[in-house]
Length: 254
Image 1 (cartoon, one colour):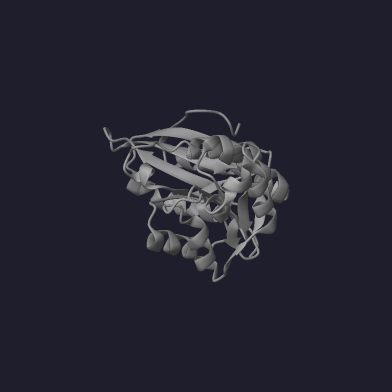
Image 2: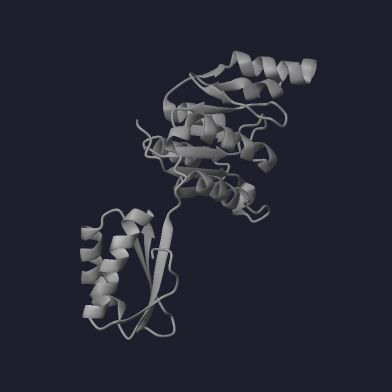
């Protein structure tokens, strides 16, 4: 399946759901993606529960997003990601010879009988280098599985983005042009919004009514400058024609 150029994240661990540990991956990955012009499409948080993780991977493997999965690839009984990934793919878990050699080299005789389990990967998986302790993550199709530890996971993700998806990088940032509209209820603007999106399909809009004044709302257009600029001009002309008070909050499009 051809990649959509968008990214999805799977954050795994009971400790995230019970509040004993706060997720740090989302803001870090967002910064990496923004630096490369890649959009984040969705985030899922899943506990250490085999049926739920299996169902999640079965669903995400049907998408075209580039998916990063954090955690659950160790050797303890609560590390279920390798097994679930194999089952979701309908593949066997097999011992990856390169990862087996890495684990044996790092731990020697202490690699057996438990640590060596980390070398059991879905058939056909390739390795993602780990610059911290060399115990690699793995890639299968559009899914990339890395440890839950930020100091390991983050450089591994950057390596994946720059090695496998450099052709998708877009260094021209999106712009977000916003206005404050006064004396108009949001419902009256819906036909205009629909016409705007039909006329300028490469922009996205946002409409955020005030919770204190229903006749005031923050309206925005987001996308590449070449798409947002004519849409912004069209919007301002329409607001002037409709006699709606419209003040620019910023001037990114102009």
